[in-house]
Image 1 (cartoon, rainbow, N blue to C red):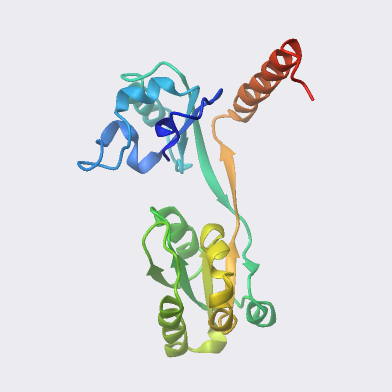
Image 2 (image 1 turned 135 degrees about the horizontal axis):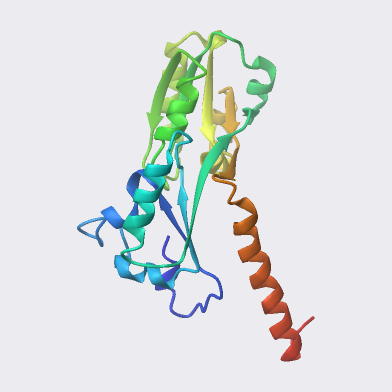
Length: 224
């Protein structure tokens, strides 16, 4: 998010992530927008990864995005998407209840752009209700009481709670344990996949950097 501002950190490899729906080329520096750097500073990046790219993107759309970025940098550009895995029980109540076919899903999120996840869940379940908190939200007991109240208003035997990996890491806080344990909460794991057969090329950038760094360390006599 803000690695370029850490002047004391001299990174050897910078990977700039920019979301498909909110490309940095269309944004402005804070407070006019969300950027913490001018667009021109994209030239500092070793490569750029466009995240959350819809699979439906066609060649023309891909080239248009590349043209927009080429106004600011000539570095390598990759396209990636999220692949959502099967829900994993986070609470004992979730383990006992399981996931039935015709359930109501309360989708609990505290992420900046939950739309891809919402679309994924809605494609699988007919009744989905979003409970959205701000990005980087630190959940409180009061927050979870609100979630629990919404859960109780439904049919508890036919209602489950889905949340993200990011949110799940916050829900296991000791101060939330009592109320969280009352809910059948499932975590949705994600994997990142590269489109257009770019995975090997991206991995090569990382591997080449690591090998070069190891060689330099050996020459300087700092290799462990």
